[in-house]
Length: 153
Ligand SMILES: Nc1nc2c([nH]c(=O)n2[C@H]2C[C@H](O)[C@@H](COP(=O)(O)OP(=O)(O)OP(=O)(O)O)O2)c(=O)[nH]1
Image 1 (tube, rainbow, N blue to C red):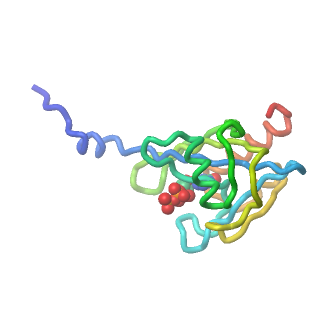
Image 2: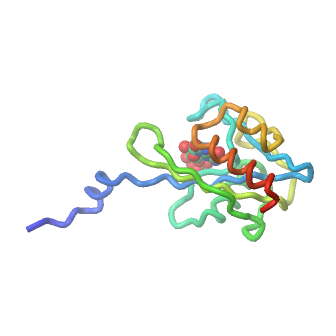
Image 3: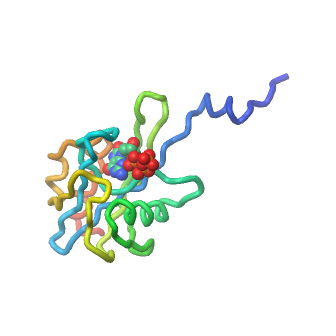
């Protein structure tokens, strides 16, 4: 007879997926805000879309509202977040996978401040892929640029 797996054993066999919500904040000139991770962090020095990991029980939109306040001192509202695309891949060497959902947002309150980043930069969508970024950001940036060019969002 098979013994049911405890939740710990199941977790060892199927490591959790890291879920990340990220946003392309788009200004009136059609430029996208990127932030550079501090050198001391994982992926230090690389550029990324603002955002972060979902906390337990949190929706993607709620995670972004929280992360954008923490990282940039901006207020974004869930109704102004439009899903754009996603990317999945391996997260580090612990056997876990990562899923990043990228949203777009044109309306927020406040001026962005680099509270968690080394620096911020407004980039033309087609130029984002020229930055040094984590691997999953290249397909995210390419798809974002295509979708913005199409005028679909
Ligand atoms: N925010 C963000 N994270 C990204 C991007 N691309 C990418 O691979 N990641 C990865 C890096 C991290 O492994 C993970 C996000 O983790 P994080 O460290 O920023 O999350 P967090 O703010 O919740 O930080 P912490 O609580 O773990 O300290 O997603 C991106 O464009 N934006």
